[in-house]
Length: 407
Image (cartoon, rainbow, N blue to C red; front, top):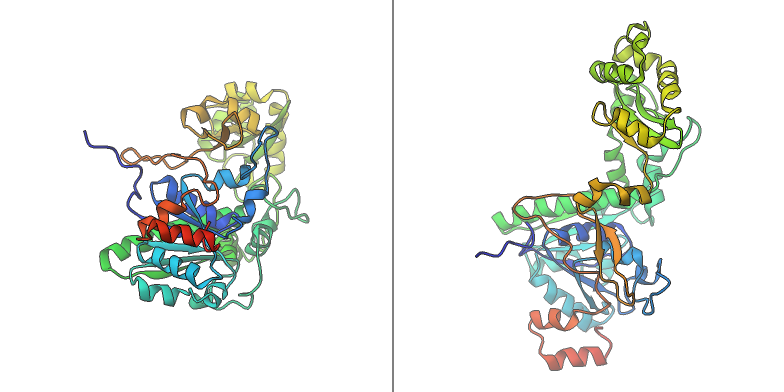
């Protein structure tokens, strides 16, 4: 019997020089789909290894939940790129790779003598991906090229904070680090596109992803609103500016979301609420009238939902209209949907007697489903195998370790 591939990207090798969230999440997505991701860490390790959170019974503390979540399925080597031998080893790794991913500030790799142009000389089919706050000068020099940036900076300048908040005057940071996660997804997409082309033409290329640009692309609605309507969009609270009802309303024990903006779904909602009178209401007859009178629409809906629990509303509305209760993680863990879809996965965690739960893979493929095959690596856990794979003799590996070039 032919063994099923680990994933659609089996046979693709990626040298991962990233830290924090955006870069590691990008390469995690690729590793989940079967790519061989070699995580090249500083000799002291990725800075997020020590950041926690840690379980109380963790007697090793090799890495916390943050690192574990976004570095599964990868191999690790500690490498000192400040040494000539360390840089030479990286070049040897790149010669056998399809792609390199890094998220340093602009100019760092050039100062190390490891620029895209240098690496391309060694491997013309190399795809080189960078994730930076404001992009790389190679594709368009921003006045902020050398500014450091993290998630809240990208959220702020990319526009998502400016349309998120409880009222028009109060911007709000989105809970998860979308300023990192969205660029990570864009970078993974760009990498796969470029590798596909390189395999057909033999020519690699530079893939430049800006965190701020990625957030603006996610907020595409504000661009055409300004162009078509001449408006400067502001936060809309828990409502949609162009649809109603399309947002969040209170339940007796929390909140639920309802998206019954079409005439068909509005009718179903009115019937479920026992409010046939609303179907003939002059301010709610069609989609635009419901937007124009959204306060009255939401007041009518919430007067119904506030009398019921989330569970009751799920029974009354689920499957009839687009509806979902606002969940916290305990409710997510108890819902059979996420169990059926393997969206909470347990992995071994060094130093702990019990496994660690991490988020699963949302991309489902029938032939090459991908998988979480192994936990995040210990620092340098795969150094010997990785170096032997590029032709280093065991004696060389031992010498590199003794001199601190590798770990």
